[in-house]
Amino acid sequence: MIALLLALCLLGGCRGSAPKGDTQVLLDGRPWDGAKPGEGGDLRVYVTLDGAELIDLPFDEPHTVEIIQPDGAKNTVSLTGEAVTMASANCENQDCVHMGEVTRDNLELRVMGGFIICLPHKVSVEVRGS
Amino acid sequence: MKNTRFLAILTALLMLLSTLPGCAAPEKEKKSSVGFYLDTVITLTAYVDDQAVLEDALKECGRYERMLSRTIEGSDVWNINHANGQPVEVSDDTLAILDVARQVSERSEGTFDVTIAPVSTMWDFTSGAAVVPDAKDIEAAAERVDYSQVTIDGNSVTLPAGMMIDLGGIAKGYIADAVKGYLMERGVESAILSFGGNIVAIGLKPDGSPWKVGIQDIDEPTGNYMLVALNRGGSTVTSGIYERGFEADGVYYHHILDAKTGWPVQNELASVTIFSESSMWGDALATAAFALGTEAGTALIESLPDIEAVFIARDRSVSYTSGAKDYMVE
Image (tube, rainbow over all chains, first blue to last red; front, top):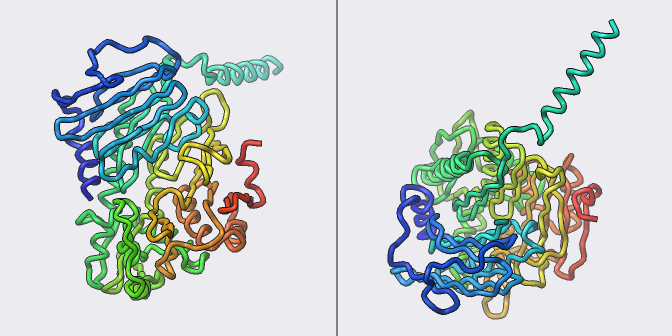
């Protein structure tokens, strides 16, 4: 029910609101300085919060991205160089963690294509061509 | 005389050429929009000029959710469930769903039944609470499940007091079909739309090849596929025990409930995938065929024209209806 309300909020009136200023992005365990990791690459990983892009990275490089919102909501996106997963999240339903990995092989086969979505936290991860 | 014919052929050729992709002025780009309705993540991916059409399509999903949700006050379903046995006026959409739901119930010995809400609301497969309802409560609730008690007269629907409808097993399919129609009316010719386990495609990929849909390997983590299905602009719906469920006292309770007993279906199956034109039919049939098991489920699907199915058993054996291999890679 809470998820539903959040979703309605996410998709309705709240959409398009500015990203939360205090949201922290950690890249490989350190506060991200805003420099784009690894330009180019035929496939990239786009991480967004509430529809606003936070960071994008090359699919082929191993990285860890942590998104920590002011309310304590935390998501950890893992890139191994071969697969992208929502490695962990402190959301209530864990749906995002259960959405599995996105690889070059399964990108076109997954029911959600290149997406991994954490609805309660409004975090979306998409693997797509650059 | 000859000249006229030549001109006609030339005109036809030119018209044909102008429809080829190379002649189209703006290149259509692959765009995606994501939403969440009826407890499901929806992803719309289409080759379009403007993403706005996808955002508008998501708004349509919201409109249907407010009509078909069991939990949103004032929806058609909420009104039926809270009418205390009195007739309720509903939309044509709700009527269309109830009509197909009844047909699937009648063909599946009531294993699929939209009046399942008294039992389905006792189960919680999403929060991780892992609570098994009391057997006596389930038994009592199952007695209040009976699709034949839904009375329809024009746009007015009557349900006996104490009974409840939940369109969870069919509404996603209806919305998927509706959103597909909405996008096609707006000129979209190539798209893949995902509504939970329902995949609906418009046309083929821009390169002319079919869309591919992975069917989950039951013994591997999500995203590993046992089979690959083809979609040439229809619907592909999978119901699997791995989608939602919990373990309690060493027993795995999955989300596919047998409407007659109120318990998770216990048979040899791990998943059923339905290929059809209508995703509403595919949605309801996936549940019905799963509950019936491979043998009776196959008979059900074979009795319907232009619908095919793949049954995957827990022991990994795979069974196809007569035309299903046309929808499979190799």
